[in-house]
Image (cartoon, rainbow, N blue to C red):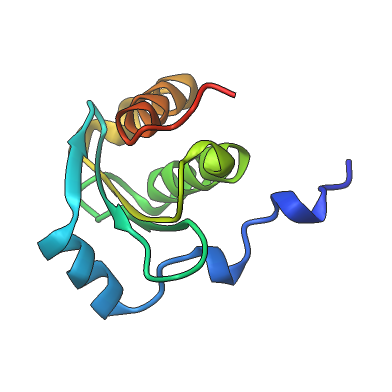
Length: 120
């Protein structure tokens, strides 16, 4: 199965610098769900960007990587639903590793809806 080029999660769609995360932490709006906290704000870039934090408190490396993979996949498929350009920082809470992929997707859907995403 070949991915379409416009559905890739490229470097330009990621939050990369510490200063970007700090700006979000101080100025962003928080949205809470069961396994996640999301902080978002209008982007300084010309596109919607994502940053993911999964600390060691969440679980072992395999669990942390699964959570990041599921989050990136959800963002990749649904980023066009977010109005305008936003910087989004998703932080996994301690119980996230015990959730199924479907539960993680549902929580991410709730986050996107609270940020004003359309249902397209």
